[in-house]
Amino acid sequence: MRPLVVTVLIFASILLVLASAAFFMFVDTRPMGRLEYLGLMGRITAFKFTGVPELDEAETRFLYNNSCTRRCHGRDVVERTKHTPREWEAVVNRMRLVNGARLTGKEAVTIMRYLQKNFSSNVPTILSDKANRFLKQYLWKSDFGESDLYIDVIYTPLEYFKLLGGAVEAEKYDVEDYTVFLVYLNTHQGRLKQFPMERLAVLKDKDGRSYEPFDWQVIYEGGDLHHREGVLRFKRVKDDKGFLELTLKDLPGQRERLFRWELPIPEAPETS
Image 1 (cartoon, rainbow, N blue to C red):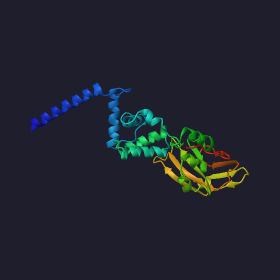
Image 2 (image 1 turned 45 degrees about the vertical axis):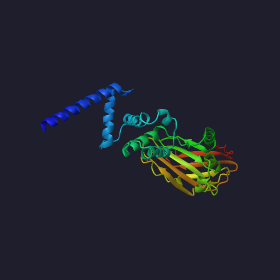
Image 3 (image 1 turned 90 degrees about the vertical axis):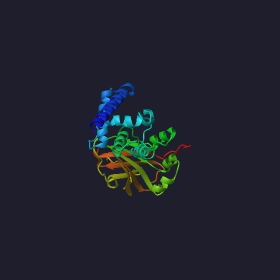
Image 4 (image 1 turned 30 degrees about the vertical axis):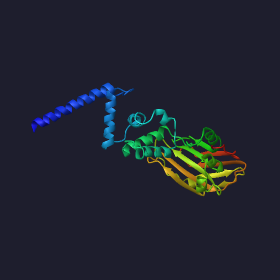
């Protein structure tokens, strides 16, 4: 029995030496050195299979690069196409569950949060450049405010849904009978509180009339509580001329966040 054990150990040692030699000769670890690369790989492996706590920023970036841009895609393919946080979650889940990316659940969540933090956009990514310009000029408003609370609001009359090329969402939100806003809340450091937008929002028109929300519905919540999307609806307000001004009150930082749209909204460009 003992000679067999010794033989196995010698054989394993030879394989280890050959694997190490092949690694140092053929594996490109640039821009980091090979020893640094091995150290990070050890940390990632421990994170993957044990109860090691969350990765730091450098380790997360290494996991993302090693799992995505070194293995499946070029960096430009991923980083030049920004998505909303909800879209990034769908992309990572598709890569793992449909396309067979070799990621554990912990790794997938870590990569998803890295992409959401560094390459997010609230502009729908399916739109043409012309449609995106129209969206930014007439419908999409931002307030980067204070207290690490970033707010984007998209006013969504029928012109918005024409940009998307379909009426299904318009019917879903009943834009014929309601004035509808998509609200995006994002934070990078803390966690979002459950802001009761149905009590914090006020809509005003050109004649000074004020309107309270009809309802507020959260349609996406990031698992790390850094991202939230919701639909804020008011009973239909005339939008043929003048302006609409949406005020969000009693949020962290500034006491009021103001968003204003000049009316009427021009005809949306063709999506084809």
